[in-house]
Length: 203
Image (cartoon, rainbow, N blue to C red; front, side, top):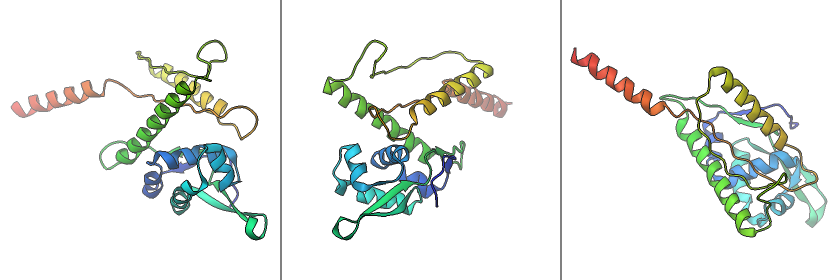
């Protein structure tokens, strides 16, 4: 099976469960941009020992998110090559009761933990630029009231940001961006529904 740039929709519960691990999520994030590589090359990019990756790669293969892509070399130097099923993996959200909220929320939690960890390490290293046009460390949270039309424009901006970052392995430094967008009035709506329900029962 040839890796394509077409989105691969992650919807199977086995696949979703595999990505609740921060380690496996990071492997998929980086591997999807590296293309076809050996475990050694992936380990070097992640700055981890190769032995620490084999278990996670096995889980990802069993879930169909990582694939064997042949071998390189011969004899004792023979290396297995791996890749992701697609360079663009997207989660399928199924909100509401009976949906996949538990798995997706766990994956988002892993995303945020990875972002916090990487921010901390970059901050502590002291070699990341924190000002000017070449700034490399950002932490941003904003709240605001948006119309449906403005949400459409915001989604386009987020998609553009994702495309700007999702580039195959090449020159430059490896970066990670974590984005979270969510409505904030869900509690008020839930409270309003409960109040309406109580009034209906009291009649």
